[in-house]
Image 1 (tube, rainbow, N blue to C red):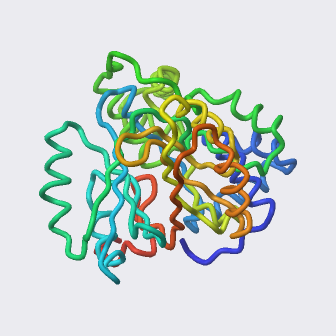
Image 2 (cartoon, helix red, strand yellow):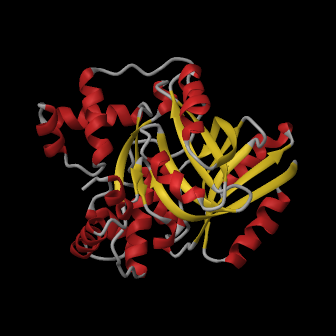
Image 3 (cartoon, one colour):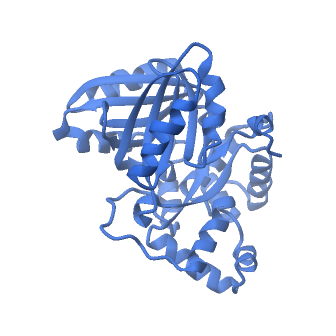
Length: 336
């Protein structure tokens, strides 16, 4: 992201976009009490600077295309920074962070089968120099994701109004037994919106070779079924949340659901999921300061029902988020 001064109105515009990634400028203006023209200018500036982007995402659970695993790496001194970037170049990684704490790097990896995961964990990952230990936690249920993150900058009624206009699903639900079917046109639509989630119906139609009304109808059908989801991607620090951290919790199995739902409702929780492995509840949080992190851990995590153990690692650098390598690092991997 290029250097950019972000003020309170910018943050409100981003918060509105988090609540409804495809909201019109007029709708966002109503939510933040500003004019449509002002919102248009602000949003164009933020997007051009790389401070915020909107992407479409194929829901891997609804489509049964892939599953996710969080991989934590403990590295030799100085090795985390060197392995994070090549790890981010894997097509399978959705996010990669360099951390400080009990582990040095964390990545969310998508895999299509046990054989695929075996190849990643047993063959490709060990090829990196400096990896001293790995810990993997397979996601078995998501309680909240960045698709529905509400950092609490807007009044609740404004957030509710924006969410009410969304056609895509922002909250989480259990995985269906059968995969949602998709046509060739559906696949093309999803592929286009993954690159630009705010693409107009006219442009989407032109790229897919259909009429704008067909493009809109098919897209909204995908959204309603939960296959296509929209996400506003922003680094928490842009919103004034300068401490980004990951928590790995061990919860009494009888209380995982209750603890997960409590965390999912908290404005500082970007995502939280039940997992297998040495920790059974994993997530990402964003707070404004170290003191806010202390308060979150002592007042929220510390009072979770069934809490047995908590581990926290603070992010030092975002290498990849939502499938995109940080723009300032792209030149290091030879991308324009």
